[in-house]
Image 1 (cartoon, rainbow, N blue to C red):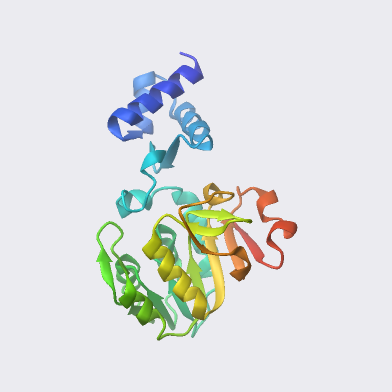
Image 2: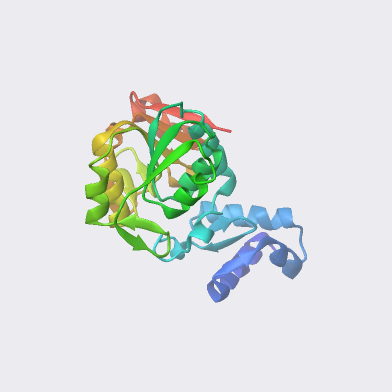
Amino acid sequence: MFAEERQQKILQLLEENGAVKVNSLSKFFQVTEETIRRDLEKLESEDQLKRTHGGAILVEAQNDDDIPFKERKVLMMKEKRSIAKAAAKLVKEQDVIFLDAGSTALYVAKALPNIAIRVLTNSLLVAYELNKKNNIQVILTGGNLTPHSLSLVGPATIRSIQNYYVNKMFFSCKGFDPTWGISDSNEQQAAVKKAVMEMAEEIILLVDHSKINKRSFVQIESMCRLHKIIVNEHAKMEALSNEAVGDITVIYSK
C-alpha cells in the first residue's frame, strides 16, 4: 500500500472512531510505528488531524468545549513540557503570577519550583497541582465552573481578577497571528485573559508551533501587548522574526 492510500485510510478510521492509536495502526497496516508517526505528522501539517500522545484525533474536534481536558493535555505534550520548563525559569521568589486554564499552564504548575510565590489562577487543576508545593500560595478566582476544563469563568471571575496585582502573567492561546493578534476559541476564557492583561506588569505568551500564523474565533488582544513569547524550537522563524514581533522577546524552548 502506498503512503497516500494508507493516510487516506487513517483519516477514514478517524472519521469512524474519533481517535486512533499508533500501535494499533502499526499492526493494522503491518508497518513500523515510526512509519505511522510520519503519516500522522504529514496529516497534521495539512490540518487534517491533531496528534496526541500515542495517537491522533480529528482536527474538527479542536474546540475546548468539546475536548475533555485529559485529551487536550496530551496534544503536543513534548512541546508543552519544554515551553513550561522555560516559563518556570522566569519565576523568582516573591513573584505574583497568573496561570490560565490552558493545558500548558498545568505543565507550568508541575515545573514550578517550590519557592515563596503567589499564584492566581482560574483553573482548579492548576490549583490542585500547586497545592502539593507548600511554599506556594494559591489564589483561586471566583466564577462559574466549566465542566470540561474545570475552570472558572464569567463576571464574578473578572471582578475577582480586578482585585489583584500580578507581576507576571503566563497564558496560552489557540491562535497567534502577527496581524490578527492573539486569539482563542472560547469567548469566556478570552475575557478572563484580557482582564488579567489589563493589570499584569509583564505579559508572557506560551505557544507551540501549531498555533503560529493561525487565527481562532475570538481576538484576545493585539500582539503589541506582549512582553515575551515562549515557543518550542520548531516554530516558524519568519513569523517570530524581529521584523514581525518588534521589541517582544522570543524565547525558544528545547
